[in-house]
Amino acid sequence: MATEADHEPGTPQGAATEKPSDSYVQSFARGLSVIRAFNAQHPAQTLTEIAQASGLTRAGARRILLTLVGLGYVQADGRLFRLTPKILDLGFAYLTSMPFWNLAEPIMEALSQSVHESCSISVLDGTEVVYVLRVPARKIMTINLSIGSRLPAYCSSMGRVLLAGLDETELDRVLRASDLRPRTSRTVTDIGELKTLIAAIRARGWAQNDQELEEGLVSVAAPIRSRSGQVIAAINISGQANRTSAQEMVERFLPPLLEASEKISGLVQLRT
Image (cartoon, rainbow, N blue to C red; front, top):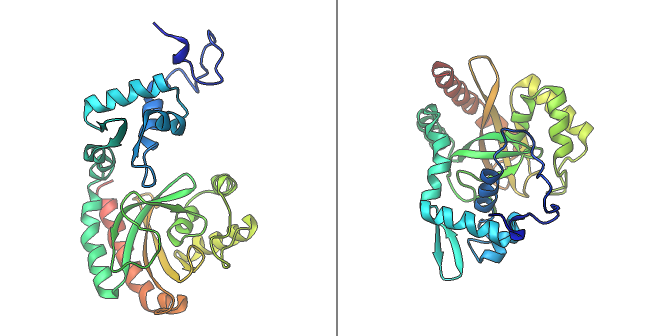
């Protein structure tokens, strides 16, 4: 039987909870919010902390946590809860559902070895890019990047390549939803100027980034396309400005990057 503790804060007792549609499973959405409550800054949390982070009541968060413990995705250590390695199954299900990424990795490794710089592939998720493959040459950012890492799309080379694949209506929506703050003194944050830059990227088929995401970081990126020509991912090479200037990145690394992006696009098109 439902109790007062089962109602979410701000929901009048006895009132029907609003749902986006009849197909929306609210309990599943709440379970995902509990999983998302864990991060690098908060790897182990108490029930109260998880309830606050997920916006749930203690009773609701407790039921979900105990369910996740029973399924092996969360472990309880006294008053603290933490994710288990089994949670990786959920993320890697995405990668294994698209086997051509496994075929792309050798191309990335060869590219990274030839230019002696890091190489990554990402996809667009809302206003951010999500890394799905990465071959690091050396640590060049203060951000520790790995598969699943997220960066803002508006000021990253891969992000702008992916934004260039959107139609104007969707591009405008994504930019207006983005937190357009200056990451460095060079970051472009004006929507009109960003649209001009992205239009140029769409026309030439590649993007470069000169220390807009982080001081000292330069990169070039190119699209990975489906059989229909849709941009489904982006691949980049990133380096250090004190070793390779943005212009040198284009002159030296753009040709092999474009060759790699075409090879990977060919693999994608054979399997989609």
